[in-house]
Image (cartoon, rainbow, N blue to C red; front, top):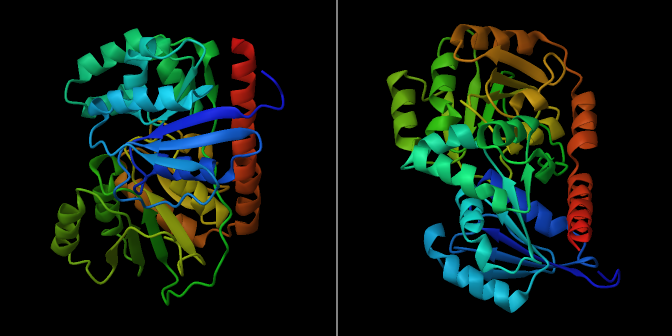
Length: 361
């Protein structure tokens, strides 16, 4: 295409509510070069946005409550915008574009960003076997898939026979966060930033720290359908004066940065933003070594400690060990910035889009 012509990019996402995929899309939209890309962000349901789009791009609310009911409005918007690239974010939305690829002109590239490990995440679907069958049969219709982690890429290629040459590993970006003095009076401060849902394993973190003999304060930032159960667990363990469910926060680390440890209890992960944010603040992470991108982020002994999955005793021992270690927090910050700086990740994404579009001509 003419080098002077902007690439028309149409990004789709279900919502802009609090979540990892939503945070990624907001960062991409806020940092993308609008001199090279004419960007439209289509949100299926933007009734309760958590993230703000500050860049000079158009945001369209399709006012659709379910992904499966959005196809007509998506098709209408694509016809109106005539994009060079459709960029889909979120699993069900990706599958919808794969199933309906024939409805869109061949010259439009349909690129999907995979945000989870499909073979594991699909277990939560209403009909897991059907979901996996559809992915295996129809995903190859997509022109390209961006995977957050190498583990995710391997899962897609090995378990769903997706062509490896149509995938790219592109890690999540992280924005620099200004460090502030801690306002916590307790030196042993733990923090978890995660959705309060089953797969995040918050319950096993609570049970683990309940066995600690040291004093601590533990802040859990996030919301989700397990809040009531988690609060009941905290109450049953009589830890109301030590463990606090703080809800969603734009700046979850405010006042908790000095001396803190990040605890991650996830049963599996794509490429968790919260661990990158912790790295941007020099906060070491204690995490279970589970399927996904955690093991690609945490370098054992350098920016955190990895523990065998489901070993609560080892997790407690890792916490106590981490509190005694002399972490080089400035080095953690520098390494995280080098690997995951939002400017670099967005620039690489722009180049990938340009290369894929050029190759398709």
